[in-house]
Length: 441
Image 1 (cartoon, rainbow, N blue to C red):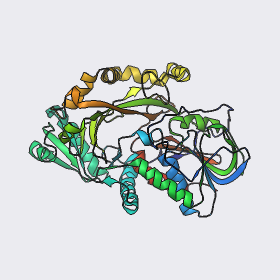
Image 2 (image 1 turned 60 degrees about the horizontal axis):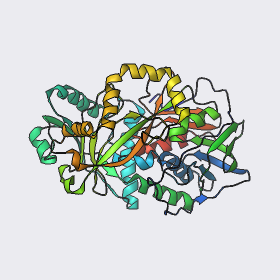
Image 3 (image 1 turned 135 degrees about the vertical axis):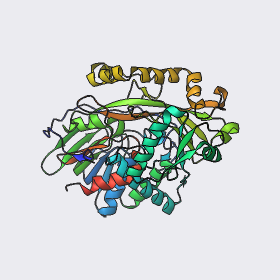
Image 4 (image 1 turned 120 degrees about the vertical axis):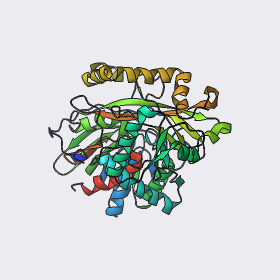
């Protein structure tokens, strides 16, 4: 877990006075009709807080929630650039409670996924939030994948995750329409409504006196010995400590405090389809392929959501904007970042064949369908209707490698969450605990 909490190599403060704006997206996360007593309008006066949290996704909300639980009576202000919370990664994921089976033993992802799944299940159980521990199967479709499946079973054992290698007969009992010669059954995997989790967090933050400023994009940070001054588009704020949970914009916020440490966010769009209701019987729970261990994505899979719908995806396509949910979402600034990012070019050369396949599946529904048919042969293209896409904030480290673990940096008067892709939602309550335990002030 060496990457989880570390101080930057160059801790000098280099504030930059440019705004970090976010494009609003409706229809995901919280509906426009939802009410939040915590949300406040723009403020023009400088206010003081014990803790300022940048970003109202699940990690930001969990951090504020944990801090108030540990320090009742203190003042917490959440600065959210959008008009509503949880609009991006939190509101656009597949709703899976991950078990921890995939991650490198000893990594932060491995330990926090295992602990976080248990914490999240207990959180949901106590509050009546929709969830189910239904299990999943990771399927070897032919003998060429069995060696990798066996290695995954060993990794599950190393991570303390219950898992069982099952034959095709047992697989057919669990998933009658799934094709495979062998599978790894992981009974502790589940599904959950993360937006409902966020609503519960907000309710409890509100009850504890927390405040949220929406439309509050961070413009500048100015830390000193005792506090950090935060300039946002909804007014100024001073806080004893700041936690940056800005997701797709976390590296840009960190740069304002000179704390990015060379990390850059590379946005990858994940596109989904949904099975039409009359074909939802083809999938009972969760069906995953055996992942390519050299690529940081799990491959197109099938997931039953808590509302009973079946989602298929995601793929992984380089997005042309931080909030690039479709091919038409293009940011000139992001294009410049891509073009000048030497690490990204090295990544493209290494994975050009895999990347080309992902793009082809994005542009060609038949190709996407064929990827699903490897797992469930009875799925046809007409069974699939488009579902909202998401964008994954994947950090690239200073040497041009995709960071494969959570990365959190502590700087002057601030903590910066610089890499928190899946299983961050599953792990969010435990990530928040670790962040709060290390706040100096």
